[in-house]
Every structure is written in structure tokens, then in C-alpha cells.
Image (cartoon, rainbow, N blue to C red; front, side):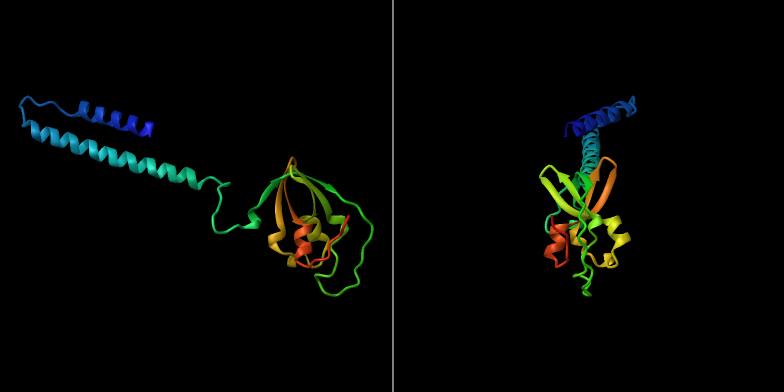
Length: 167
């Protein structure tokens, strides 16, 4: 708001100084009316520019809360991923949700809120036949020191009926 007032004052002063001074005197009421109309026009333009800048700042914030819809694919967390090793592997079932996810893809995501088990997306895509059928609501993006990685949360997959590894 302070910037708006400064801009209006500067434009008003520039308009008054730039107006040519005539030797003949016009009626003072015409001059006053023109000055007031000019100031009002400048105020309206400055307010519109200020409102537009406010909308740009609000729409460019990627972390703003979206009321009414929570898109879990856009969920991003900070953490570190490390391998989880276990040798038990059972691939006898035919139902694609009952085919266990590869244990080699199981990772631990270390966050401020604790460790979580997850499956790395690239590993699952390379080593699991039904990777395209994994639910998108279980997909989470993790910001690590080495870049961003996509993982599928093991608890979410388990709730959805997928066969996941356990500790």
C-alpha cells in the first residue's frame, strides 16, 4: 500500500509539473476539475496494477493449500532413501495385486516424522510386471540431496490390497 501511495504522489507531481503554463488565466474551477480527474484516473490505474501484482504473487506460490481437493500426487516430502534388504520372495499367486512387490525395491525414507517403508518407482518399473497398475494415490515425491525421487508408500499399498514386504 505504501508503494501505491508513493507511485500516486509521484505521478501527480509529474503531471502537475509537466502541464504547460499559459499566460492567459482560465477559470480556476476548470483547472481544479481537470486536476482532480487526472488524480482519480491515476489512482484507479495504480490500484489496478497493484491488485494484478497481488494476484501474480498469490498464484505463483506452489506451497499454497488447495481447499476442497487434496491431490496426493503433488505431495512432496524431504528425506533420505536407503535400501532395505530381505531375501524372502514368493511369486506363486496369479492375481496381480497378490504378486508381491520386489523386496529389492524396498527402501526406508527417513523423515523428520520418522522412518517409512516405501518402494522406489524406478526400481519397481524395471522389476515388477504390474508396475503400471500401482495406485497413484500412494505415490510420493521425496526431495533428497541427490535430487527428487518418486516412491510408493508401503502402508498405502498394503491398505489398497497389494502384497508388500514387512520388516
